[in-house]
Length: 82
Image 1 (cartoon, rainbow, N blue to C red):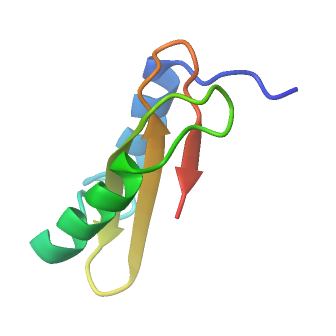
Image 2 (image 1 turned 135 degrees about the vertical axis):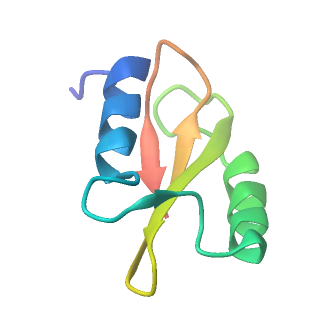
Image 3 (image 1 turned 45 degrees about the horizontal axis):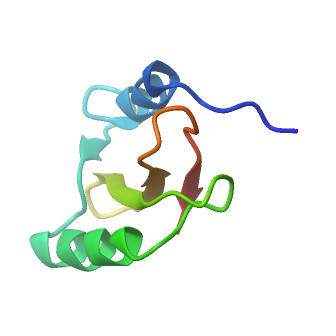
């Protein structure tokens, strides 16, 4: 069984990918992509607890983009890259 990720662990992981670490910046590469992905994440249900999801993402200009659907249940911590 997978152990739930705490908020601090998630923020640490996202912080590692954010600006200053490997060239990643918070958010999507464009406002349009962020709006689309935020809408997709908001429509997703957590596969672990059934809770609602929200969008989190980061990108490296012109090379890489990571979009996550993150469970909003603070005791769950599930995330799904899409």
